[in-house]
Length: 222
Image (cartoon, rainbow, N blue to C red; front, side):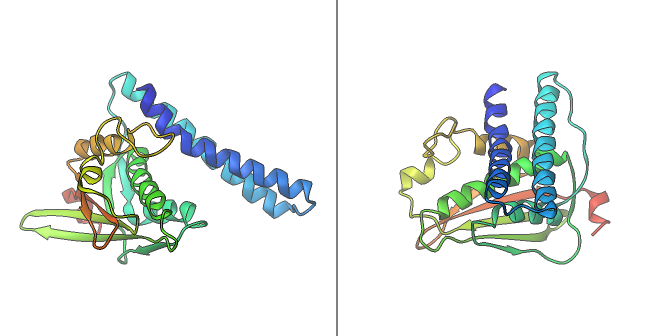
């Protein structure tokens, strides 16, 4: 439980620090204005609220309670995550028109896609021309209907051994990593009847394919 908390709270804390540092530098350089300060403070507030949700989520798990669910629009969620990441990275977002709803806990779904997208971005950073793409599709197979979200990076070519180690508990290539991110993602996806698989691209890079089933009520919303 403490490892999950440490893993998930690190990102918003880092963003919190970066926004505060940027505001401090703009003030020191005499370049701040009211709109810039408001924007920075709003982002700090958003991250603080996100940390609060993570803490509350961990408390719910610790008490053995079921997390609250609501209708979450995958399109809007992915747009939000990509907007927060693409300031420094090239992200191609291919989303169909309309709303793609699933019934889930918003924080849990956000953790799933934030982890996958961050991994893709970090892998692609090892390439001089880093690029990550995100694509959402509605797939029907007989009576079964589900969303397939594909996140592709152009990271380095992995050996067979390195590829097979992806997602193994406590195994990570990151200097300060815990080796828990993919396990958290898989656990949450299993809870919603979804799954995650990895595909090696040619000549290099990885595709992360996330599948989530669509409930009948959400099917009618499309």
